[in-house]
Structures are given as C-alpha cells and as structure tokens.
Length: 100
Image 1 (tube, helix red, strand yellow):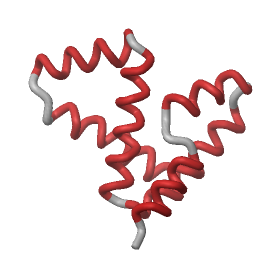
Image 2 (image 1 turned 120 degrees about the horizontal axis):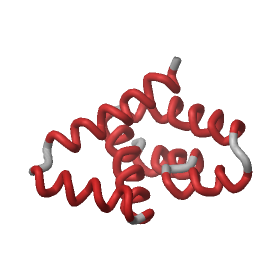
Image 3 (image 1 turned 30 degrees about the vertical axis):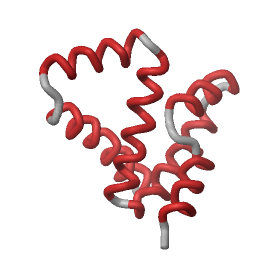
C-alpha cells in the first residue's frame, strides 16, 4: 500500500511540474527526457526529491517500491534503474540529512 501511494505521488509530481511549464519548456523538457539519458535522470531524480520535500513520510514507500522493482530485474536493468531514480540508499541519506 505505501509503495503504491508513493509511486502515485511520484507520477502526480510529474503532472504538477508539467502544469507549471510553458509550452516551450514542456516540449524542450520532453525532448531532453527522451533523447538524452541525463535529461531523464535529472527529471526523475528531481521528481523523487519533490515527493520527499512535500511528504517525507512517503520515503518508506519509495524505498519499498524500488527494492521490489530491483528484485524483478536483471543486474543490468537494476544498474539502469539505480541511475534513473533515487536509490534506497540515496533516499535514506536524504531523510537523515533533512529530519530534525
């Protein structure tokens, strides 16, 4: 349940970010996302951060989901996912540095 809520929050953050963009920004961002792997990484990491900044309680769900996804994939696919999205370790580091 926590993982599902966290992933829905992640996807809704994409929608929120897109709504704040001009048409030009959206199209340029779309091109970067699909044509340049670093654009995808920046977008997905920024979206994960937005989720955590808005509700740090969703961190556990993101971690659980990532661990579940990794268990379904080959080592090569896991390596790619670990580049694209914040890893469980990066999420834990974020929590440790942002909780008071």
